[in-house]
Image 1 (tube, rainbow, N blue to C red):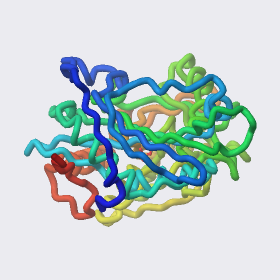
Image 2: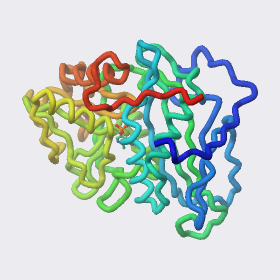
Image 3: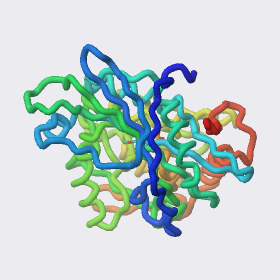
Image 4: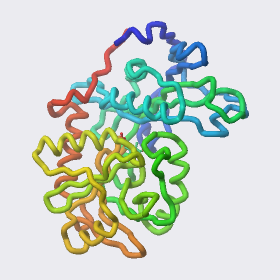
Length: 362
Ligand SMILES: *Cc1c(COP(=O)(O)O)cnc(C)c1O
């Protein structure tokens, strides 16, 4: 595996900073001492892997990505277990998704094993930044941007891959407290044939106004409906959505408009291993609201790297607010969260080989 980045050039920070005491207080605002970089030029391919002290990118104003948004990113976490060892959660799955996102944005794919190695190398160098408290983690943010200094519209001839790290605590201010979500008919996140299944900045730009409106109306997150009929539930905020209807767990199928979450996949695998009935099938908002009213809707939760499992306590729809699970985190929601985090912090066996220890390279 370690062949890919043999030419890796490492330049260490001459004055490493002291890790701030409140480094995990605000999500994604504190970054570690180093970053990983690699470039692409047509004719040359991906080359020149390096780790350098964290620095600004210095893009000229005519840089392609600043105008047309040809960019992708991903997000994953590393956890310090009780034994002190740092483990990344499913780095191969995230590297694969980064490649798929890149393909959708006409970005030349970067070998998955290189991406995984960049994760391991950078976390190793900045391992002193990985917090140790339960609930905290090191967040890895890999991104690829079109770096050609030209505003002609075409796939860029040059790209920059970079990776930065941020120590993080609990994602939502409420912690594991239930969130309230509101379905919107006014805005959509992704349409068939569009970018919904790629982790690309455009999707997040598209979501911001709806998220602001939801907050103004007193909700935490937007419940996205499909773009065609505005009827089928798709995602919640930047999480995949799952609901328990009686003894069946339902989540929308990966039909192209939904981001294929690694947490989603992990949660489905665990629930199937527990013998639960799990269906990937379309679910209409009116059916969801009806089930909430007649008591069939037992639990709703979102899944994603940032919050792992986030319980939903209330759903807004056409001016009405409907409670879910008495506004509390349901039993399966908690079981899933406990099982996933126990694997992440190496407190439980890892039968799927999801966690990858970060070796000491030098
Ligand atoms: C990142 C993301 C998710 C969750 O994916 P994970 O791999 O579980 O972190 C779900 N939906 C959207 C829109 C996302 O951006």
